Image (cartoon, rainbow, N blue to C red; front, top):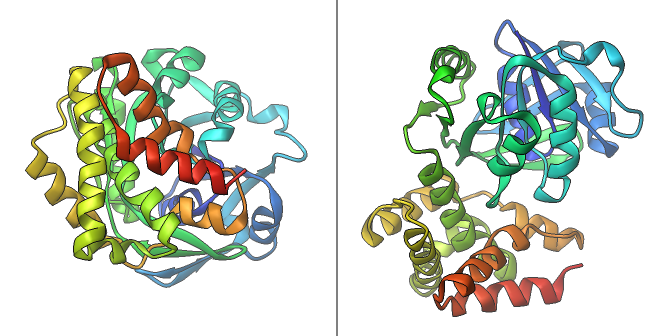
Length: 308
């Protein structure tokens, strides 16, 4: 089996390193200094575990150069791990790489990812996915595994069940906790609710996730999340009760307490954030449904003001 990881940021790097423990061929596609250093030194993982993977373990292609033709139609699984701003380009690459009977999923933050993938690849080749693993790039080619979470997957069509269960076994053997669930839309929305609660608050305060467990910060995070949950419920998405959401948020903050979320890293770097597909998207959907989302609007407006 060949697994292609497109977009080698923090989570993509972590998953690539963990998947290298399997017998499968691992193809990485990325860009910039981080990929250049992986080509030179391989990947080093710190944090939850400490290990290194030699560069020869991976097949590497670079966005600056392009992907050679012999990769066309060669991937059994494509994992899209880039930022939401690169999703359109990575969807096009996935269409080039994926076998006709392969499966693809995005662990990119935000709403609308599955719809974009289905449009490009067809629903029969797309899987819902969400991960709560925490990771950040410490230095080029080194990823810090800041929190051991889970990867949840859900099929879009019943014919994917056998392939999905087989891939689940590979994920578990690599050290990536994986669970297959039934409701894909609920899966994606629950991850978005976590993101809208954590990312902008941590980014604005300049703190690691665990700091949001402090009483006032946690209350603001919960209220922000419940605004989003009300929008989800209006769209007929089952996201559980407010208490279940609060308990889940607390657990994620505990398990990723030392993680510096991606939005905070983007703010520090002066880079574009994913606020448009998170809190701003909640606001936009709320307006269409007549649901007030003042906290999400405030957080989105502040992040938009202080970033490109």
